[in-house]
Amino acid sequence: MKSIWIVDDDHSIRFVLEKALTREGLPVRTFSQTREVLAALEEDTPQVLVSDIRMPGGSGLELLTAVKKQLPGLPVIIMTAYSDLDSAVSAFQGGAFEYLPKPFDLPRAVELIRRAQEESQRESVIEAEQVEMPEMLGQAPAMQDVFRAIGRLSQSHVTVLITGESGSGKELVARALHKHSPRAEGPFVAINTAAIPKDLLESELFGHERGAFTGAQATRRGRFEQAEGGTLFLDEIGDMPLDLQTRLLRVLSDGQFYRVGGHSPQRANVRVVAATHQNLETLVKEGRFREDLFHRLNVIRLRLPPLRERREDVPLLARYFLQRSANELDVETKRLSEAALQRLINFDFPGNVRQLENICHWLSVMAPSLVVEAKDLPQELLAAPGSYPTAAVTDVVPSATGLTSMPAPPPLPAGMVTLPPSPDAWIAEMAREARRLLVAGEPDVWDVLTRRFEASLILTALDLTRGRRIEAAQKLGIGRNTITRKIQELDLDA
Image 1: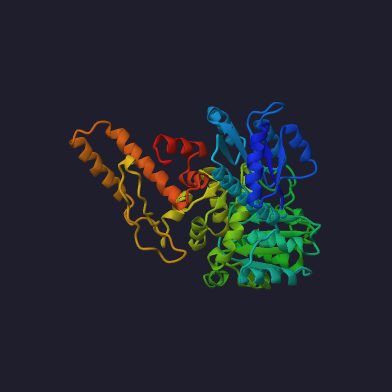
Image 2: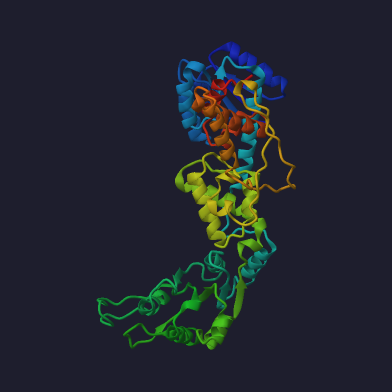
């Protein structure tokens, strides 16, 4: 087990913390200066670092900055006097896990270090799992069938038709087919036939000769020539105009085509992979898709399941997308609470994997804390059918706040949480209390109700987190120093 590192120029602080942690069975190393820590990091790494903020020879903030560059996932606890709260804010901005005010209560200090240790262990598990991701992810049986099909087709040049709803990852399958084929060294060229106007699509596919039409000032190679020796992915093939379907059929049949305005045949050494979200059999019956082209494309068909048919893959995909978004935005990776994850698993995702990816990117920007709660999810998920209410928690607030207990409703079934049946009921109740106080001529009604409201929020969050202030602050979407200050102001620390 890695050690807890204590850094403080005060021998008594080092001694007290070392003895307390040793009694808890935790290995400890102590340091009196920051340069000793930096030297030790060349040979070893801690599980948790606890550092004073003001020391001769280098401050705790400077040490925090240096350590975070080397070990970004390491929980760092900054010890500080109450007069150093401004510095503590800077510590949080620098990535500190929590601050420990001096003089501190020893059991609370040990509990805080324990929580940091648990966080360090979670980070280690996440880092171990964050190996280079494959080009496709999926543990569901339906996805395993797709993977097996890709493996069987790995040495084949046969045309493949991929079917599946929009956003389900059809291009990823096409890229995987190319990557694992004998053509992997050649180019992979993709074109969405539905996204290009009909008048331009022919030139995009087959290229054109100089002077073939107004604006054609030079000869241009089309996608078939660009994909020479590789794979051409034709997305949304069901939207291709009928006259171009005829030209595509000719290429697939004899491997030749003509540029627009050209008279010399061009050879096409290309493997075609097509995809559609439409039912091509229906389009054939309606006369909107050539039957002979359908049979030419439908040599091998791969059906990609929608995300609602592979719900067991949602946690894996969500974690991957959150990690990728964090890397792109250069922020810490957000994590989903059990309630938020369950909400995602239960959602039908009409936009499939692409929609989940967009939601994770949104959360990386908009979620107020590192742990994403169900309430932090986009409105599209909160308003979805089957949404679940969040049960209120019984709380008895100290009489100093003037609040009364709030009875908890019957427990929900395991794994179920719901939105309040009447989300504005508490507002109406507060309005009634405000009217009563105003009519009675009570002074400072604004301050009284504001204190009651804040106290209720904080105590409820502390009850849910069993007194863990850091987690309570994350759930409330406020800073860790803010919740400490509010607890002191509202006399809730009794």
